[in-house]
Image (cartoon, rainbow, N blue to C red):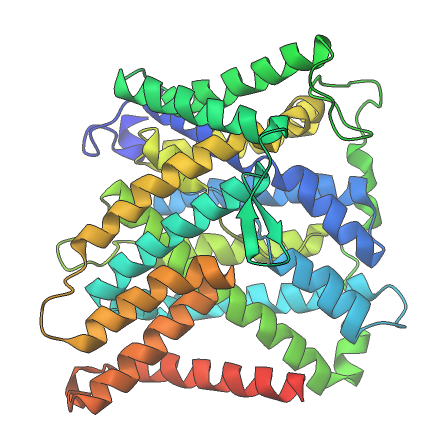
Length: 453
């Protein structure tokens, strides 16, 4: 373990890394339930998607563990799966036979492109070219975004017609249990209990089970907090989606296919960049210049996961911001990722256990981790006399949670930074890579305007 993951160098232990890996998995495990639900809308088998998601997540996370040696878990990205099912399959490809096969082909091509870009270090150059102030703003913005996701999952924050969002109801036990879970985690962390975040998740779940047995808590129809093994294993279902690519359609509809592929590319690229920056900053993995060593291997792991996921039958695989929960639990090396990857494989056998863990139990971990990541805002130099740095960091901070997109937050931050640098007469401070990224964002906005017309 020491030779492979350099534990002493990172001031960590096997026990600490394993606990961190379990914590990351438990905060990510919801994707095993959510992804099949979303992708099944496109005509895919929910059981097949479950198996494909678990295996692809394990493969990508193993690459992260052994190739990059970072504590980052990967799985099918939220947002990208919704785009896959609702925008592409049910929208642009409506009426086509088995539209999911065409979408999987686009995801596969996206993965291949990213593998090629990894060898040219394009994504590595992007992440290392982002100014430090923006990186800290991105990290803090992701913290607010993660906390917002946690509060939504527990219905602490709900949709509100008059004010867009508002406070949930204290009559809702999901909300109450999540708040209790947050207090449990905070207390355990205060008393320096090893694995406090993981213990908090499990303790909140157990409280929920007790209340369900007592008849106080009534779960949603068709669900239960108590694992149900009555349906057995259905691993063979993956044959319904594995290797079902449709290159014939892609070749005969090349322009439409390229547009679909580019959309997957864009969101995945900047979601991953933002996630890696945020998690690495929280883990103290950035060097003195604000760069992340071996970042190219991080992106290669992401690309391999996406390619394998498309072949198995799931949407784009990307780095998960929930990895920050494992980092908060002490994860510093690839052993954390290895543990997370193993748990994805274990989930194939014990899926009823992991799928029974409710969102109100994992939400407190996300809210707590969000607080830790928001600390990065203290590193932003708002008073350095450069309005571009200040506005860029600020836009990253506010746009991520408010637009519900890491990629959109980065877009506004970089567009604002480049434009203000030009206004300040500091064009020489804009690197060629930042100009390329700026141009990509301008093209993205032009595409969005065209789509809305």
